[in-house]
Image 1: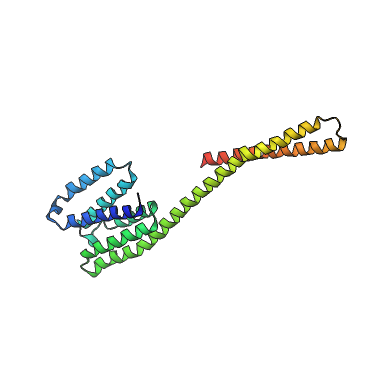
Image 2: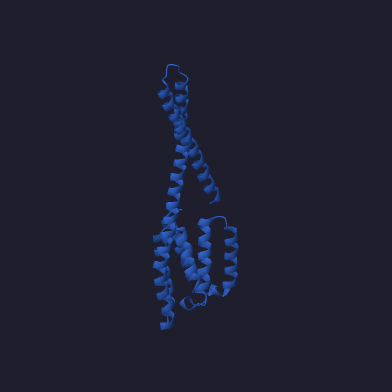
Length: 214
């Protein structure tokens, strides 16, 4: 799902929750929350729509319990961090601005101004943490790709080249016209190649073992 689609979907959930809270239908809040909870359980394996369902549920709870003055307002912070860990930073920022606009409608005192200001401060923090998380995921993917390339080179190209050197050295050693010094040098080349081959096999095993442990 594209970034714009995610923002639109999350914003739609907030608008639905806000409109529901200012209509006479708000008296059916418990039933509506139960319905959203059932939908959330149904969508639990579809992550792209699951976050929308969770956001809708949290927004309904907050908007129907007096918005900025809601005792459940802290759930917004958890929602923003969940969104930040799963989406690009701009998605978190855009959705936070929409929440600020909608929640500002319930601003009726200096006390209710505090949660709104805290939301403005928590948004950059969620953006920063989300960015760091996504950068780490990208770095992990790059390292995994590089690791795969190294294993491919060790198991195929390097091993094939070393085996060819060992075979060529063995064939040359079978030639009777070689002098003792030449044979000694070929033995040295062959032994060095075998040592390199053994080292590469040990390195491959160590990388495989670390991948399995990870």
